[in-house]
Every structure is written in structure tokens, then in C-alpha cells.
Image (cartoon, rainbow, N blue to C red; front, side):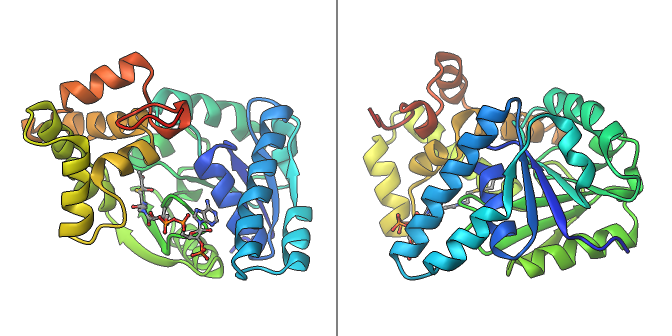
Length: 284
Ligand code: CAA
């Protein structure tokens, strides 16, 4: 079994940054890669800011923060991935984007390196088939915010070897995460359940049943959810929510997964939630 010491994360956004953050805190050497060195460096800066929050609340010492940050390097191009024992793709939730990335990075990887995807809904078997290593390909799905959420959902494709799956499980438990195992069906477990709820909340708004505040307060105070569904949609990103609904709708071929037209309209307007400062709430 490959001895995982160096982890590369492809995509330095919200999820990729979070994965790099917890990997470095667990003692792994981390390479953070994105479309440019600058984007990767911005990712490292955001990780430092998130670690500072943990220092402020006493969950992390200054010394451990400094040591963790020192273990992360921003990559200048895909050649840097050659050192990685485990590569985790955490790019946009679009199949074409992920396929393009695999095409670019596979020739640079060690033959024994494991390739994982943080996809939240797309078929692991199908993504694996676009790589040179379907046996060494696995789904490791983290939740946002990664440093806070305990769960990692593991998904094996039809060709994933036992060795690869056990390595992914061992890695996740070294990050102090609890794992669940999902079969390779659209949306896996978390998003098969969570996204239709969010989509239904958007329908509830669209049909005028309640206001944004009423919908969110109903679930926050009436069902003890930490965030209301519309606030959570803004937090996840409305583009990601739409992509996942489309995967459910196409993959399960059932009209109950039809993305709400209001969700489609917001995404078309570029109102993607917190990251664009506008979604169901205004963050400007
Ligand atoms: N990095 C490090 N620490 C962070 C953090 C981050 N990015 N974000 C929050 N925290 C920490 C805060 O520092 C704080 O720590 P202390 O308690 O020690 O002070 C703690 O988390 C709580 O944060 P806040 O006080 O700022 O705010 P909060 O109490 O409202 O909690 C929340 C924020 C943890 C995000 C909470 O609202 C929550 O759990 N929301 C639901 C999140 C959720 O459902 N995530 C799953 C989304 S689905 C998904 O990810 C899968 C997918 O494929 C789409």
C-alpha cells in the first residue's frame, strides 16, 4: 500500500483550501495547486486566516499553526504534483472541468500515486474512466467548512481497488474525520438528501409560501438546523447547488429532482451566494 506522506490538492478554493488545511494540521506535507501560482498563494493566505480563527478560540497553538502553514507549499504549475502520494481534486463541480484537470495532471503523477476527487455528486466510476488509474481512483468527499465538519463520505468506483479504498479510509481517519461509505450513485448520501431539501426551500420561496427569513427561521428554530436552507445554499454556492441538482435530475431521471427555476435564474444572474456577495442574502 502506498505510504501517504505528501498530499496534493488541486483547487485552492473553499473546499481545496479546507482539505489542505486539515491535511497540514495532521502532519502531511501539502502541495496546493490551482490555475496559477497567485491563486494557490491566495489559498494559502485564506488557510492562514482560518487557522488564526482556531488560534483565537484556543483550538490551535501559535506554534502548531506556524508548523502547519510551513508544511503547505503553493504550486507553480502541475509539475509540482510529481512528489505527491495522494492527489485530491477539489475543483469546480463540473464534469468537463474535472476531466480536463485529470488529463493535465495524470502524466505528471507517480505511477503509484492515488488520485481522489472531492466531487459532491458526479459518478466516481465515470470520472475514473477518464484517468490512467481507475484502480487507484476514489471519492473522498469533505463537507464545508472542512476544518469544522466531522464527516468524510467515501465512495468507490467500480474499479477502485481495496488497497486504494483502505488508504483513503486511513487518510481520512488520520485527519480525525468520521467516514461513511456510499455506493456510487448520483449525489451519494449527503447530497441525495440535503440538496432536494435546499431545492424545495427555493421552491417554497419561488411559490411565495414564505419569505427568505421565514423559511430559514422555520428550519433553524423549528428543526434545529445550524443554518436555514437558503443561508446554507448561499454558503455552499448556488452554482454548486445547481450542478448537484442537475446531476440528480439527469442521473436519477425523476422529475422530483427538477432544479427550481429561481435557482437557475440566480445562477444565470451571477448571484452565486456568499462568494459573489449576493444570493438569497445581500453580503455587500
Ligand atoms: N475554518 C476554521 N474554523 C472555522 C471555519 C473555517 N473555515 N468556519 C467556522 N469555523 C469555526 C469558528 O472559528 C468557530 O469556532 P469556535 O466555536 O471555536 O469559536 C466555529 O467554527 C463556529 O463558527 P462561527 O461561530 O463563526 O459560526 P456558527 O456557530 O454559526 O457556525 C458553521 C458556523 C460551523 C458553518 C455552522 O453554521 C454550520 O454548521 N452550518 C452548517 C454547515 C453545513 O451544513 N455544512 C455542510 C454543507 S454540505 C457540503 O459541504 C457538502 C456538499 O457537497 C455541498
